[in-house]
Image (cartoon, rainbow, N blue to C red):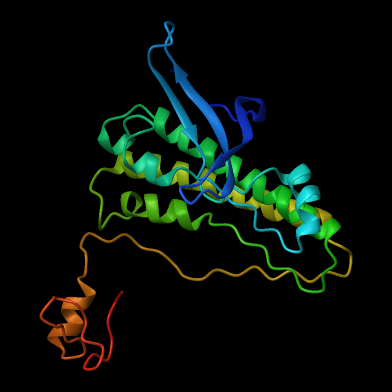
Amino acid sequence: TGAANLNRSLWGGPIEVKTSAGENAAVCLRLFDLDADAKDFLLYYSRPARSMIFPAEFAASYAAAAGTFIGNGASFVYHAGSLGPTLAAGGTGVAEARYLETVKMAQRQLEQTALWAMRRVPWDLLFLYTPFPDEGEHLLRGYIDSATNADPMLGAAARRLLEEIYETSDDLLGAVLANRPNDTLIALVSDHGMEGVNKLIAINRVLEREGLLVLNDNGLPDLARTQAFYP
């Protein structure tokens, strides 16, 4: 299988589905692989998303302009190896190309949403959000930092993939800048930085050790005696 190439025609949807609670939602589909005899295939679908457009009269124009909300790339699917063996597991890069395609598709939908909102919704202050590069940083930074990865070739490959994810955010920002009203002031903000880690911290155990968290007989926080706990 060759490297995935982003092509909108390769994606299907939005397709309406029902959630476990019986609510209407929609997904987008991407067939990544199909055997010649059709006995084995790899079909990816985005997380089912309910329409949450308010006021409701905007829903139809939003759907026509931007389809359905996708939100994230396939980071959990990629990390689990379901897009194929990752580079860290000895893969050839196919899984990374497939993951990057899901990132680009999510960013494309977010760009369409941003442009729709800028053009169709009356606004004085407009907030736009993308989960990238945060999602990619969580996924890849540990392979890039030398303190948490001793394989320089893997680190270089992870850096290249992360740089491509950054480029998708740059493209999104470029689209917003190119289409903003002339008198618009744009502020670009981030919520935190990132570095590789090679250990986990049991926060509640630390809080319990310091006397800030008290557990009851069932092992649950005793709220009457607890000052802080990590839910």
